[in-house]
Image 1 (tube, rainbow, N blue to C red):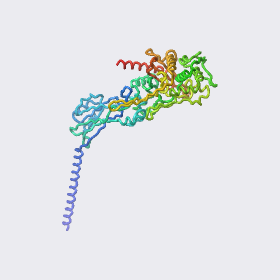
Image 2: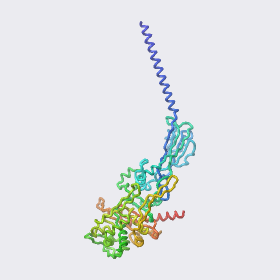
Image 3: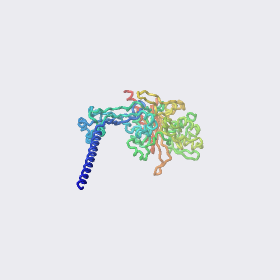
Image 4: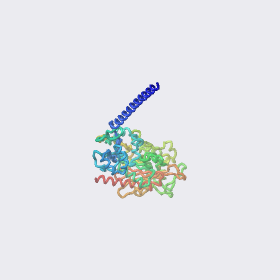
Length: 538
């Protein structure tokens, strides 16, 4: 009985052993099969190397975006790939990936850094921005979404012409490139020609941005207009928006995200040309006034910039030396209604719309009800009080004088290019006469004298004659020491005989238009003059 029981136990144990062995063997076979499958299964890999948005061009069809080339080498895990990786500073990291059988991509300094073979391929790619050029107009993106400037307001157009550069090749499930596998480069509309054409002149933009740095206008702006049609040739605001470090830009207490060229400021004496124009248009320009250093209107005492007074002043000499009492008296003679009418016709109190919601501030022009005393009219007459204007508005006011009395709406969008570089005009130039040619000729002569004899002397250059006007405007704001902050201005145009360019420079918390801005005007104007000569010669 004991022997029978023992045999049964042994038999049962044997059955369990055989079953377990069979199960273990099947698990082993399945594991081997899975490993085999993992190592031999073909997978198509798509590697996006670079993407582009639609282009932004300048007025001469030079690329503002996608113009800076960079180079990416694609190295296959072959003997040739290992050998060539010796040239790279990060070869150890690359070798680790190559040993794993992976395709490696890495930046290289130039296209010819490697000899192009089946094992190494170099691709030309394009960075979106050229440093921080035109940061306030062009703006910036977050991934492929426009967040500021042209990038934001024309996002749909730029996004719809996006493209990509990809690599396609087969590898196993572990990401190892299959032996003998060719790497295909696919260009899906990458860096195509389609895009937006701005009125901006890229070379003039660089001149302006450099001048702001050279003259320490670290919180301010500059605008350059085509005098004939008010197209914006350059527009720079400081501080710039650092696209490579938006966090530091956000933390900058001087508010870099404000485009100062499109924002309203107290303008001061650059507004005196409006008062002068209104006087000429309304036959009130014959005033001769004895400046004693101050003037009283409606029990309000106003001071001249020259404490001891200028003596006898007419319109020409008052503009030349920027005599406040003269223009206070003149504006009272002209009257508030006529003064407002002239200012409105010159574009004050009017926002500029660049399309798709991209707009400037409108500034502020007093209502006629506010000009209820000679003091309030006089305040407006020399550019103070509640008057606010953007540097773009001020520049455009002087453009009207420069071109003989025709008002043009400032423009920024010139047109569009398709993939074949066919241009479609998008500008809407429709001028309107707002001042007589006679008035403009007189003002040009007087503004020429400002540069030759008056407050604008620091803008004088021997290369050509120019016209201009200075200002040092009270802002009504005070610093921590209780001192009122002033904004300095210089706006002018050149050449005198046939004005082509209008330049407006403004510095926040400045000393004076003569010392802060006129020298910057001179640098910009001289460099534009030299640039145009070179263009003609070439």
